[in-house]
Length: 316
Image 1: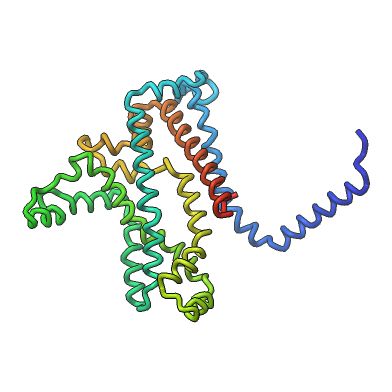
Image 2: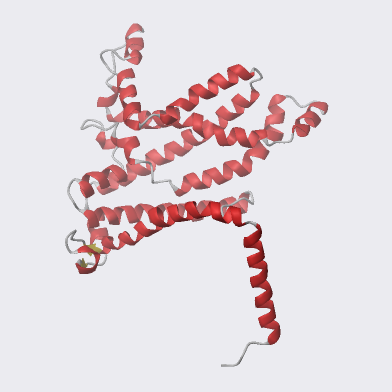
């Protein structure tokens, strides 16, 4: 083997010295990043190795090594299931509604809170809307069942006072999706505004002063200054949301379901729980989870590409 030219060796050594100098200069930041890297490696990347059981007839006693390989058998079985297309359809529809209604809700609330001038009133509203984020979905579903109860729920009391018959919301499939989306907005809208309010606080006040001098009203300032300043933040959060498009959340749905409303509410996550854990079909449900992840990855690539072309902002 011929030795490398002297100039190449010198460039490599110079680059190494610069890298070490950079690491030494910012060693505190690198040390702070180690716990985060370990977290993602241990809890996100290592479990990905378990995806191989989607291609095996996995036996919990035989393990990964001794379980027999079956190729795409479980993917074929997944699509042969007559219920799978309804479950995938439910997942797409509920996730789509969540992006349409839930994602802009935090932006709108942040813009409205930003317009409030009474600080105490603003703090009270922020605290009230933040609180649901700290409740579990079990508690939230219990609250909604109480509020929407056909016998003594406040909503049905109001409906009856107007002369109409009470509605059994949790016993009808047509109300399942609105309840899931509405409860999600109530639970996350306050928490979602934190990032947007932080972004709004970073806008240069001189831009608004200049706009006032030019005669712009509050609406024109919002359209011309506030929204364009928020656009990079909105784009990044939207891309992250797209990446979790089919990952709607097991607890968020399962706690609201019962035998009467499951037809429009069962999603991939609840199916994986019922088939995978309750019936011990680990390989089949791992195939479903892998399918869901690949769809999310594909949507993320598409959304990232379109965002880079349209706005110049992207995740990578």
